[in-house]
Amino acid sequence: MQIISKPEKLFKILKILKLKSKTIGFVPTMGALHEGHLSLIRQAKKENKIVVVSIFVNPKQFGPKEDLKSYPRPLSKDLAFCRKEKVDFIFLPKAKDIYGKNFSTYIQVEGLSSVLCGKARPGHFRGVATIVTKLFNLVHPDIAYLGMKDAQQLIIIKRMVKDLNIPVKIKAMPTVREADGLAISSRNMYLNKSEKLDALVLSRALNLAKLMIKNGARDSLSIVNRMKELIKQNKSVRIEYIEILDTETLRPLNRVIGNYLIVLAVRIGTTRLIDNFWGKLSR
Ligand code: AMP
Image (cartoon, rainbow, N blue to C red; front, side, top):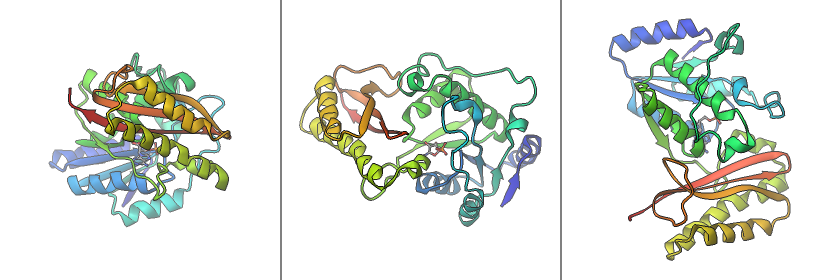
């Protein structure tokens, strides 16, 4: 496993490998690797000759009051994790090498970036789209592996790749959960024991919605209201949003139909958690 920190070096090495027709699978991460990242890495290993994992806590996607400083950075553990999975390259850049002096170009995916998490985190998706574009330009992957856990991020990146003709295939990977249903996230480590129990309400609310839909419910508002009722039973969980949307446009659906996405975001203490369910009902 080769660890590379300089963008130009990574670009050169991968360009040569690509010319030799080696397929490149890419997993962009912010580190603090867990089972969710692992599923992406393993899929990339299965489908490509070369696997590149980037570890970069991207300052441009954090708001001024967010957890950029405290975001977990267990680097040696992450490297051991990747070594074990036989990752070929780790890209571990410094912020100053990614955002040089006078950096002033950003990618803004209109509309999709300003709703849901984009409302609570202004500028977040601009930061995400910009770093992902830069990483794609440096790695030139054949396939990039992204988690469905970050639904809005995935939809935005897919839109961007299509709109800008970026030559990469985006592969969406299912959310990996703890045995109790909690979606695994690097930010779960901010939760204390009782908050972790409180957090189970997210997957429970999604399960309730799934059951309602299975039993024939189609009216989004009544499904969302039932989810809210369930969550509100737990006084320490504050709902930020719960919505049922179209998976491509993120437009709200009055009725559950076609490719739909149920998304929710809550705050528990100081931690913000998101979860979702991707469903399909024939029209
Ligand atoms: P992050 O390090 O949080 O930026 O995540 C890097 C990638 O891993 C993103 O594409 C995430 O959507 C994905 N990811 C994070 N958590 C999970 C999970 N529990 N299951 C599957 N993928 C995940």
